[in-house]
Image 1 (cartoon, helix red, strand yellow):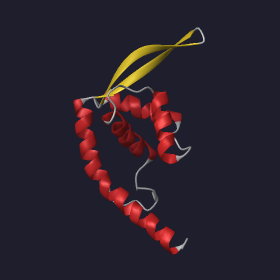
Image 2: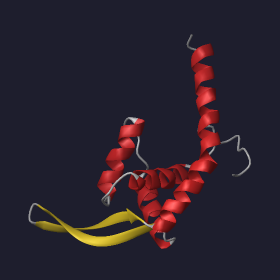
Image 3: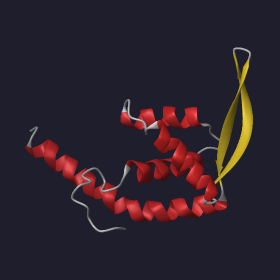
Image 4: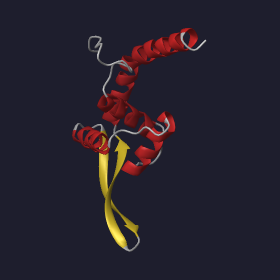
Length: 126
């Protein structure tokens, strides 16, 4: 993991890094693929109304497919007599392996931030 960056308080990782990490998690627990709308809904479940910026999500999906972590399949969705192109994403074996590495890499960051948040809650909001 990279050196501690004092400019990144929350988990010391970028939104892009977290987005990629959580995409791998979501696909690791599903037996079917997901499209971008599915990812957006799942992100809102963990962070209230938070979701990555559309460009962050789409760039992450594109990059991960290019890196071989995800398999992308083109499909069409019908909506009010219109056909819209969508991409279904599934996890590759390489993606599964990368997720296991990332979990080990990011666990200390999550644990550290949990301790910091608990400390703040116990001292500031007691």
